[in-house]
Amino acid sequence: MHGLIFVTWEKYLTERFGSGFLSAYRGAIGEAIANAPLASRLYDDATLLAGVGAASKISGLSADTLLREYGRYFIINGLTSHLCTYVLSQVHSGRDLLLTMRDVHARLRRTEEGLTPPLFNYELSSHPNEVVLLYDSPRKVCDVLWGAIEGAAERYGEHVHIVEETCMKQGASFCRLIARFSPPQASKQRHLQVHAQVTRQQTQKEFAEIVLDFLPEGGRGPTGSVTLADLQKILLMHRQMSAHYLRPAVLLEALQHLQFAGYVASTANQPGDDLTRRRYWRVRVFWE
Image 1 (cartoon, one colour):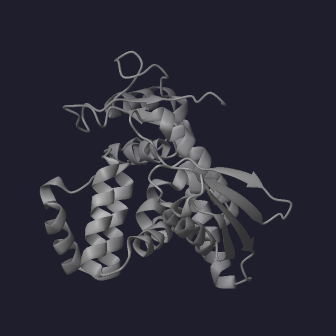
Image 2 (cartoon, one colour; image 1 turned 180 degrees about the horizontal axis):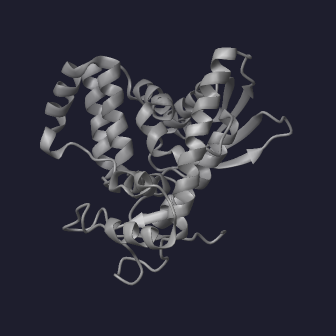
């Protein structure tokens, strides 16, 4: 499971219950600050499921309630918004965000070895603002998807009506959810906020695409991948751009945005990895 899930899960617990709760939670699962989760790493599914159980016991809330709240939080929190900006720059409604999430998860399964994000299918509806989601996973955490649907609507100022026709937890072979979105109400303040956000995301997207163009497609080896320093030299040689865009922090941000969109892979989870030696390469999926 992707480290972003673990990091945002702990952010959710902190914002929902406070720092004291997080300390108790970490004590219950045997986690210290030194081994706190990182967004760039991969972790075992069982670790999160154990964490959900611990949080449920400490909070007194059911695991289903926590997972649904977390699903909503994952979509709207600032860290997800930052790391997934390349994806979000191409989405303008809750319905489209859900469809895009499905494609991103499919790409991530091919770019990160050992990563198995939830892969749900969908059916298009005759209603222009409706989508039918089909979820089939041995994890049976459809509550996260339910919360994500609510978060997608909230992110774009929409309302959503959800009907769950079948559920795996009730013996069905898969979950079938129908989500119908209603458009947001007009607001001058929201229009200005959205315009500023879209402008910023578009700038980041355009730079990320430049970076993507100069990444090799080979793989982990020196001839098929580059380090951050290699990429800096390549761009300096082939592109006329301000010094700001050649800063390691800016390049790293662009690479992260592409990784979370499933277009770039790296050696982040290999033994001995660090930012200096980490190698990056472009990944093409079969439908592109």
